[in-house]
Length: 129
Image (cartoon, rainbow, N blue to C red; front, top):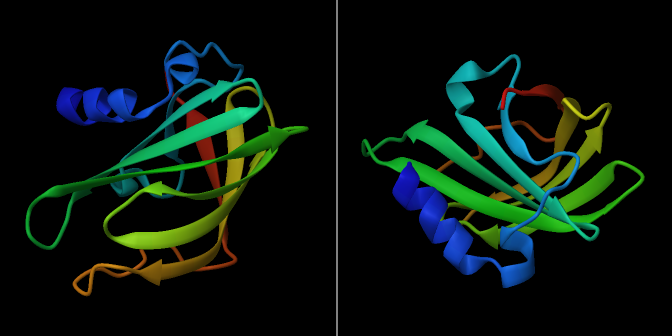
């Protein structure tokens, strides 16, 4: 996991690496603990959202990153780095430690991969660190 986070940090512009936003931290989806972890970094109105998923069909862990502009606790995330899916997700922060995410659309890129969340279903997530 350290390698994945390190690679992600190398991909980010310098100003975002040192972010200290309200929503920064490690999050988990409440009803889907098997979904893995989410890392959020927010700075100057830009939010980076990275997901680390459990092992997939081939035993490898998958990860991806999305980003978007945050305003009034809302952000529409689009793909930044992901070899498996091209998804659009709406996130609404309900507090500094809770959010709701709803996948609006998802298209598999990798033919062996399927989108893990259904479109239009809201999921609550909680900040754990």
